[in-house]
Image 1 (cartoon, rainbow, N blue to C red):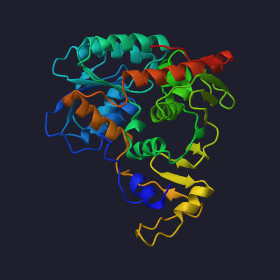
Image 2: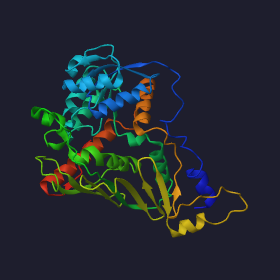
Image 3: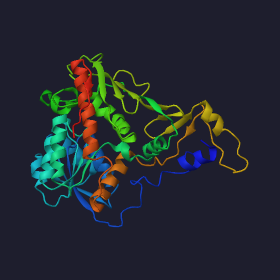
Image 4: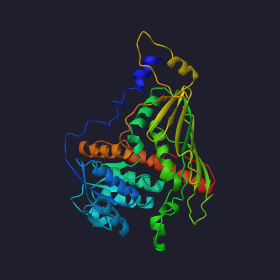
Length: 396
Protein backbone atom coordinates (compact mmCIF):
# COMPACT_ATOMS: atom_id res chain seq x y z
CA UNK A 1 0.00 0.00 0.00
CA UNK A 2 1.90 3.04 -1.24
CA UNK A 3 1.28 6.32 0.46
CA UNK A 4 0.36 8.20 -2.70
CA UNK A 5 -2.05 5.48 -3.79
CA UNK A 6 -3.60 5.34 -0.35
CA UNK A 7 -4.40 9.05 -0.41
CA UNK A 8 -5.62 9.01 -3.99
CA UNK A 9 -7.80 5.93 -3.72
CA UNK A 10 -9.43 6.43 -0.34
CA UNK A 11 -9.72 10.20 -0.19
CA UNK A 12 -9.30 10.04 3.57
CA UNK A 13 -7.81 13.50 3.74
CA UNK A 14 -9.44 15.74 1.21
CA UNK A 15 -11.36 13.71 -1.31
CA UNK A 16 -14.93 14.28 -0.17
CA UNK A 17 -17.40 11.47 -0.70
CA UNK A 18 -17.07 8.87 -3.41
CA UNK A 19 -18.29 9.54 -6.90
CA UNK A 20 -20.12 6.22 -6.90
CA UNK A 21 -22.20 7.23 -3.89
CA UNK A 22 -25.39 7.46 -5.85
CA UNK A 23 -27.35 9.12 -3.06
CA UNK A 24 -25.19 12.24 -3.10
CA UNK A 25 -25.83 13.36 -6.61
CA UNK A 26 -27.19 16.56 -8.12
CA UNK A 27 -30.82 17.15 -7.26
CA UNK A 28 -33.24 15.61 -9.71
CA UNK A 29 -33.89 17.63 -12.83
CA UNK A 30 -37.49 16.54 -12.72
CA UNK A 31 -39.08 18.69 -10.03
CA UNK A 32 -42.22 16.64 -9.60
CA UNK A 33 -43.39 16.99 -6.02
CA UNK A 34 -44.71 13.82 -4.41
CA UNK A 35 -47.70 13.89 -2.09
CA UNK A 36 -46.99 11.82 1.00
CA UNK A 37 -49.06 10.29 3.77
CA UNK A 38 -47.38 9.43 7.08
CA UNK A 39 -48.74 6.44 8.98
CA UNK A 40 -47.51 6.56 12.58
CA UNK A 41 -46.84 9.90 14.27
CA UNK A 42 -44.60 8.94 17.15
CA UNK A 43 -41.16 10.49 17.55
CA UNK A 44 -39.86 8.78 14.41
CA UNK A 45 -42.86 9.72 12.30
CA UNK A 46 -42.68 13.36 13.37
CA UNK A 47 -38.95 13.35 12.68
CA UNK A 48 -39.48 12.03 9.15
CA UNK A 49 -42.05 14.76 8.50
CA UNK A 50 -39.49 17.38 9.56
CA UNK A 51 -36.89 15.96 7.18
CA UNK A 52 -39.37 15.90 4.30
CA UNK A 53 -40.35 19.48 5.05
CA UNK A 54 -36.67 20.29 4.50
CA UNK A 55 -36.96 18.56 1.13
CA UNK A 56 -39.96 20.63 0.08
CA UNK A 57 -38.91 20.65 -3.59
CA UNK A 58 -39.57 16.92 -3.58
CA UNK A 59 -42.17 16.10 -0.93
CA UNK A 60 -45.44 17.51 0.31
CA UNK A 61 -46.82 15.74 3.38
CA UNK A 62 -50.55 16.13 2.98
CA UNK A 63 -51.92 13.46 5.33
CA UNK A 64 -51.10 11.86 8.66
CA UNK A 65 -52.51 8.87 10.49
CA UNK A 66 -52.26 7.56 14.04
CA UNK A 67 -54.51 5.55 16.33
CA UNK A 68 -53.64 7.85 19.25
CA UNK A 69 -55.31 11.26 19.21
CA UNK A 70 -52.59 12.96 21.22
CA UNK A 71 -49.97 12.09 18.60
CA UNK A 72 -52.10 13.65 15.89
CA UNK A 73 -52.36 16.81 18.00
CA UNK A 74 -48.60 16.82 18.69
CA UNK A 75 -47.85 16.54 14.97
CA UNK A 76 -50.15 19.42 14.09
CA UNK A 77 -48.69 21.57 16.87
CA UNK A 78 -45.10 20.82 15.87
CA UNK A 79 -45.62 21.60 12.19
CA UNK A 80 -48.07 24.48 12.68
CA UNK A 81 -50.08 23.56 9.60
CA UNK A 82 -53.04 21.49 8.52
CA UNK A 83 -53.04 17.88 7.33
CA UNK A 84 -55.72 15.50 6.18
CA UNK A 85 -56.25 13.45 9.34
CA UNK A 86 -56.87 9.72 9.65
CA UNK A 87 -57.07 7.22 12.49
CA UNK A 88 -57.46 4.26 10.08
CA UNK A 89 -54.52 3.70 7.71
CA UNK A 90 -56.81 1.94 5.22
CA UNK A 91 -58.73 5.18 4.70
CA UNK A 92 -55.47 7.03 4.07
CA UNK A 93 -54.48 4.44 1.47
CA UNK A 94 -57.75 5.05 -0.37
CA UNK A 95 -56.73 8.69 -1.00
CA UNK A 96 -55.73 8.77 -4.67
CA UNK A 97 -53.86 12.05 -4.24
CA UNK A 98 -51.22 10.29 -2.13
CA UNK A 99 -48.25 9.00 -4.15
CA UNK A 100 -46.15 7.53 -1.33
CA UNK A 101 -46.51 6.55 2.31
CA UNK A 102 -44.16 6.56 5.25
CA UNK A 103 -44.80 3.65 7.63
CA UNK A 104 -43.39 4.34 11.10
CA UNK A 105 -45.58 2.31 13.41
CA UNK A 106 -45.23 -0.50 15.96
CA UNK A 107 -42.97 -3.22 14.51
CA UNK A 108 -45.70 -5.84 14.75
CA UNK A 109 -47.85 -3.70 12.40
CA UNK A 110 -45.21 -3.18 9.69
CA UNK A 111 -46.22 -6.17 7.60
CA UNK A 112 -49.98 -5.66 7.41
CA UNK A 113 -49.70 -1.96 6.61
CA UNK A 114 -46.92 -2.44 4.03
CA UNK A 115 -48.93 -5.23 2.40
CA UNK A 116 -52.00 -3.00 2.21
CA UNK A 117 -49.94 -0.12 0.81
CA UNK A 118 -48.53 -2.32 -1.96
CA UNK A 119 -52.02 -3.49 -2.87
CA UNK A 120 -53.17 0.14 -2.89
CA UNK A 121 -50.50 1.05 -5.43
CA UNK A 122 -48.41 3.32 -3.17
CA UNK A 123 -44.65 3.74 -3.02
CA UNK A 124 -43.46 2.86 0.47
CA UNK A 125 -40.76 4.01 2.88
CA UNK A 126 -40.97 1.35 5.61
CA UNK A 127 -39.09 1.95 8.82
CA UNK A 128 -36.72 -0.70 10.12
CA UNK A 129 -36.83 -3.48 11.05
CA UNK A 130 -38.74 -4.47 7.89
CA UNK A 131 -41.00 -7.06 9.51
CA UNK A 132 -41.57 -8.60 12.90
CA UNK A 133 -40.57 -12.11 11.83
CA UNK A 134 -39.24 -14.27 8.99
CA UNK A 135 -42.59 -15.54 7.60
CA UNK A 136 -43.81 -11.95 7.22
CA UNK A 137 -40.59 -10.95 5.43
CA UNK A 138 -40.97 -13.82 2.97
CA UNK A 139 -44.62 -13.07 2.26
CA UNK A 140 -43.95 -9.36 1.75
CA UNK A 141 -41.04 -10.18 -0.56
CA UNK A 142 -43.24 -12.45 -2.68
CA UNK A 143 -45.94 -9.80 -2.86
CA UNK A 144 -43.42 -7.16 -3.91
CA UNK A 145 -42.48 -9.32 -6.91
CA UNK A 146 -46.04 -8.79 -8.16
CA UNK A 147 -45.65 -5.01 -7.85
CA UNK A 148 -42.32 -4.33 -9.62
CA UNK A 149 -43.09 -0.70 -10.45
CA UNK A 150 -43.65 0.36 -6.84
CA UNK A 151 -40.67 1.40 -4.74
CA UNK A 152 -40.34 -0.19 -1.32
CA UNK A 153 -37.42 1.24 0.63
CA UNK A 154 -36.45 0.09 4.13
CA UNK A 155 -35.33 2.67 6.70
CA UNK A 156 -31.82 1.40 7.37
CA UNK A 157 -30.47 4.87 6.72
CA UNK A 158 -26.80 4.08 7.39
CA UNK A 159 -26.68 2.62 3.89
CA UNK A 160 -27.05 6.21 2.69
CA UNK A 161 -24.58 8.05 4.92
CA UNK A 162 -21.49 9.20 2.93
CA UNK A 163 -19.16 8.14 5.76
CA UNK A 164 -20.48 4.59 5.68
CA UNK A 165 -20.23 4.47 1.89
CA UNK A 166 -16.58 5.47 2.29
CA UNK A 167 -15.93 2.69 4.80
CA UNK A 168 -17.59 0.15 2.51
CA UNK A 169 -15.29 1.35 -0.27
CA UNK A 170 -12.22 0.98 1.96
CA UNK A 171 -13.23 -2.58 2.82
CA UNK A 172 -13.71 -3.46 -0.85
CA UNK A 173 -10.34 -1.96 -1.82
CA UNK A 174 -8.54 -3.95 0.87
CA UNK A 175 -7.32 -1.17 3.14
CA UNK A 176 -8.41 -3.11 6.22
CA UNK A 177 -6.87 -6.33 4.92
CA UNK A 178 -8.58 -9.54 5.99
CA UNK A 179 -11.36 -8.55 8.41
CA UNK A 180 -11.96 -11.09 11.18
CA UNK A 181 -13.59 -9.15 14.03
CA UNK A 182 -16.46 -6.69 14.34
CA UNK A 183 -17.24 -5.10 17.70
CA UNK A 184 -20.38 -2.99 18.07
CA UNK A 185 -22.24 -1.37 20.92
CA UNK A 186 -25.21 0.91 21.24
CA UNK A 187 -25.67 1.70 24.92
CA UNK A 188 -27.96 4.02 26.84
CA UNK A 189 -28.75 4.78 30.46
CA UNK A 190 -32.49 5.10 30.14
CA UNK A 191 -35.61 3.16 31.03
CA UNK A 192 -36.76 3.44 27.37
CA UNK A 193 -40.19 3.99 28.91
CA UNK A 194 -42.48 6.79 27.72
CA UNK A 195 -44.68 8.54 30.30
CA UNK A 196 -48.42 7.87 30.10
CA UNK A 197 -51.39 9.45 31.83
CA UNK A 198 -53.80 6.66 30.94
CA UNK A 199 -52.76 3.15 31.98
CA UNK A 200 -54.86 1.64 29.21
CA UNK A 201 -52.35 3.12 26.74
CA UNK A 202 -49.33 1.38 28.27
CA UNK A 203 -48.76 -1.14 25.48
CA UNK A 204 -49.73 1.28 22.71
CA UNK A 205 -47.14 3.80 23.88
CA UNK A 206 -44.46 1.52 25.33
CA UNK A 207 -44.80 -1.23 22.74
CA UNK A 208 -41.01 -1.65 22.51
CA UNK A 209 -41.11 -3.35 25.92
CA UNK A 210 -43.52 -6.13 24.95
CA UNK A 211 -42.64 -9.21 22.90
CA UNK A 212 -46.01 -9.23 21.14
CA UNK A 213 -45.16 -5.94 19.41
CA UNK A 214 -41.39 -5.52 19.51
CA UNK A 215 -38.06 -7.04 18.58
CA UNK A 216 -36.46 -5.23 21.52
CA UNK A 217 -32.96 -3.79 21.47
CA UNK A 218 -31.83 -6.02 18.62
CA UNK A 219 -34.52 -4.66 16.30
CA UNK A 220 -34.56 -1.06 17.47
CA UNK A 221 -30.82 -0.40 17.80
CA UNK A 222 -28.48 -3.21 16.77
CA UNK A 223 -30.26 -3.88 13.47
CA UNK A 224 -28.58 -0.80 11.99
CA UNK A 225 -25.07 -2.15 12.57
CA UNK A 226 -26.02 -5.70 11.59
CA UNK A 227 -27.51 -4.34 8.36
CA UNK A 228 -24.35 -2.40 7.55
CA UNK A 229 -22.19 -5.51 7.85
CA UNK A 230 -24.59 -7.45 5.62
CA UNK A 231 -24.24 -4.64 3.07
CA UNK A 232 -20.53 -3.88 3.35
CA UNK A 233 -19.49 -7.52 2.92
CA UNK A 234 -22.47 -8.61 0.79
CA UNK A 235 -23.11 -11.40 3.25
CA UNK A 236 -25.26 -12.76 6.03
CA UNK A 237 -24.39 -14.66 9.23
CA UNK A 238 -24.47 -18.45 9.27
CA UNK A 239 -24.66 -18.97 13.04
CA UNK A 240 -26.44 -16.76 15.56
CA UNK A 241 -25.91 -16.99 19.32
CA UNK A 242 -27.50 -14.46 21.65
CA UNK A 243 -28.11 -13.93 25.31
CA UNK A 244 -29.66 -11.29 27.52
CA UNK A 245 -32.02 -10.55 30.33
CA UNK A 246 -34.09 -8.02 32.20
CA UNK A 247 -31.17 -7.22 34.43
CA UNK A 248 -31.96 -3.77 35.76
CA UNK A 249 -35.45 -2.42 35.04
CA UNK A 250 -37.84 -4.63 37.00
CA UNK A 251 -40.90 -2.76 35.79
CA UNK A 252 -43.00 -5.36 34.00
CA UNK A 253 -41.27 -5.18 30.62
CA UNK A 254 -40.83 -8.33 28.56
CA UNK A 255 -38.07 -7.41 26.12
CA UNK A 256 -34.57 -7.48 27.55
CA UNK A 257 -32.70 -4.40 28.77
CA UNK A 258 -29.27 -6.02 28.38
CA UNK A 259 -28.36 -8.07 25.29
CA UNK A 260 -25.36 -9.51 23.48
CA UNK A 261 -25.49 -11.06 20.01
CA UNK A 262 -22.67 -13.01 18.38
CA UNK A 263 -22.86 -13.61 14.63
CA UNK A 264 -20.55 -16.01 12.81
CA UNK A 265 -19.96 -15.38 9.09
CA UNK A 266 -18.37 -18.65 7.95
CA UNK A 267 -17.55 -17.76 4.34
CA UNK A 268 -15.81 -14.52 5.32
CA UNK A 269 -14.24 -15.89 8.49
CA UNK A 270 -15.68 -13.09 10.64
CA UNK A 271 -17.04 -13.00 14.16
CA UNK A 272 -19.40 -10.11 14.85
CA UNK A 273 -20.20 -8.99 18.39
CA UNK A 274 -23.23 -6.71 18.81
CA UNK A 275 -24.26 -5.55 22.28
CA UNK A 276 -26.63 -3.09 23.92
CA UNK A 277 -27.53 -2.15 27.48
CA UNK A 278 -29.97 0.36 28.93
CA UNK A 279 -28.04 0.60 32.22
CA UNK A 280 -24.86 2.45 31.21
CA UNK A 281 -24.32 5.12 28.55
CA UNK A 282 -20.53 5.52 28.69
CA UNK A 283 -19.70 3.79 25.40
CA UNK A 284 -22.81 5.04 23.64
CA UNK A 285 -22.47 4.14 19.96
CA UNK A 286 -19.37 2.20 18.97
CA UNK A 287 -18.61 0.38 15.73
CA UNK A 288 -15.19 -1.20 15.14
CA UNK A 289 -14.22 -3.22 12.08
CA UNK A 290 -10.87 -4.97 12.57
CA UNK A 291 -8.64 -6.33 9.80
CA UNK A 292 -5.06 -7.49 9.33
CA UNK A 293 -4.01 -4.13 7.82
CA UNK A 294 -6.04 -1.77 9.92
CA UNK A 295 -9.17 -0.97 11.88
CA UNK A 296 -11.98 1.49 11.30
CA UNK A 297 -13.62 2.98 14.38
CA UNK A 298 -16.99 4.59 13.64
CA UNK A 299 -19.29 6.91 15.47
CA UNK A 300 -22.52 8.02 13.81
CA UNK A 301 -20.89 10.93 11.98
CA UNK A 302 -17.18 10.39 12.43
CA UNK A 303 -14.75 7.69 11.41
CA UNK A 304 -11.06 7.06 12.15
CA UNK A 305 -8.77 4.65 10.30
CA UNK A 306 -6.07 3.04 12.48
CA UNK A 307 -3.47 1.28 10.31
CA UNK A 308 -1.52 -1.63 11.75
CA UNK A 309 2.19 -0.96 12.46
CA UNK A 310 3.47 -2.00 9.04
CA UNK A 311 0.94 0.16 7.20
CA UNK A 312 1.51 3.05 9.60
CA UNK A 313 5.23 2.99 8.85
CA UNK A 314 4.62 3.07 5.11
CA UNK A 315 2.13 5.92 5.41
CA UNK A 316 4.58 7.99 7.46
CA UNK A 317 7.34 7.67 4.84
CA UNK A 318 8.28 11.09 3.49
CA UNK A 319 7.46 11.31 -0.20
CA UNK A 320 9.49 14.27 -1.53
CA UNK A 321 9.18 13.19 -5.16
CA UNK A 322 5.40 13.14 -5.48
CA UNK A 323 4.73 15.93 -3.02
CA UNK A 324 1.81 14.00 -1.61
CA UNK A 325 -0.41 15.76 0.92
CA UNK A 326 0.83 15.34 4.45
CA UNK A 327 -1.31 12.99 6.46
CA UNK A 328 -2.62 14.39 9.73
CA UNK A 329 -2.48 11.85 12.54
CA UNK A 330 -4.40 12.08 15.76
CA UNK A 331 -2.70 11.44 19.09
CA UNK A 332 -3.69 7.77 18.98
CA UNK A 333 -2.16 7.20 15.55
CA UNK A 334 -5.36 7.38 13.56
CA UNK A 335 -6.37 9.16 10.35
CA UNK A 336 -9.73 10.88 10.08
CA UNK A 337 -11.95 9.53 7.31
CA UNK A 338 -13.08 12.51 5.29
CA UNK A 339 -16.75 12.43 4.29
CA UNK A 340 -19.61 14.89 4.15
CA UNK A 341 -21.59 14.70 7.39
CA UNK A 342 -23.59 17.89 6.95
CA UNK A 343 -26.84 15.90 6.78
CA UNK A 344 -28.05 12.94 8.78
CA UNK A 345 -28.73 9.55 7.25
CA UNK A 346 -32.48 10.08 7.05
CA UNK A 347 -32.02 13.09 4.74
CA UNK A 348 -29.87 11.08 2.34
CA UNK A 349 -32.25 8.11 2.53
CA UNK A 350 -35.35 10.17 1.77
CA UNK A 351 -33.58 11.99 -1.04
CA UNK A 352 -32.75 8.62 -2.58
CA UNK A 353 -36.32 7.42 -2.03
CA UNK A 354 -37.48 10.31 -4.21
CA UNK A 355 -34.93 9.58 -6.93
CA UNK A 356 -35.83 5.88 -6.92
CA UNK A 357 -39.49 6.76 -7.49
CA UNK A 358 -38.80 9.31 -10.23
CA UNK A 359 -36.12 7.33 -12.06
CA UNK A 360 -37.51 3.85 -11.27
CA UNK A 361 -34.35 2.69 -9.50
CA UNK A 362 -33.96 -0.04 -6.91
CA UNK A 363 -33.17 1.43 -3.47
CA UNK A 364 -29.89 0.55 -1.79
CA UNK A 365 -31.98 -0.58 1.19
CA UNK A 366 -34.59 -2.69 -0.54
CA UNK A 367 -36.94 -5.61 0.02
CA UNK A 368 -34.14 -8.21 -0.30
CA UNK A 369 -31.65 -6.47 1.99
CA UNK A 370 -34.39 -5.53 4.42
CA UNK A 371 -35.46 -9.16 4.56
CA UNK A 372 -31.93 -10.34 5.30
CA UNK A 373 -31.65 -8.00 8.27
CA UNK A 374 -35.14 -8.93 9.48
CA UNK A 375 -34.04 -12.58 9.37
CA UNK A 376 -30.99 -11.73 11.50
CA UNK A 377 -33.10 -9.91 14.10
CA UNK A 378 -35.65 -12.70 14.31
CA UNK A 379 -32.99 -15.41 14.65
CA UNK A 380 -31.12 -13.39 17.29
CA UNK A 381 -34.27 -13.02 19.37
CA UNK A 382 -35.11 -16.70 18.92
CA UNK A 383 -31.62 -17.61 20.13
CA UNK A 384 -31.88 -15.22 23.06
CA UNK A 385 -35.30 -16.31 24.30
CA UNK A 386 -34.85 -20.03 23.60
CA UNK A 387 -31.22 -20.33 24.76
CA UNK A 388 -29.91 -22.07 21.65
CA UNK A 389 -27.81 -21.43 18.57
CA UNK A 390 -29.82 -20.55 15.45
CA UNK A 391 -28.64 -21.31 11.92
CA UNK A 392 -29.25 -19.44 8.68
CA UNK A 393 -31.34 -21.16 6.04
CA UNK A 394 -31.65 -20.46 2.33
CA UNK A 395 -34.78 -18.39 2.72
CA UNK A 396 -34.96 -17.22 -0.90
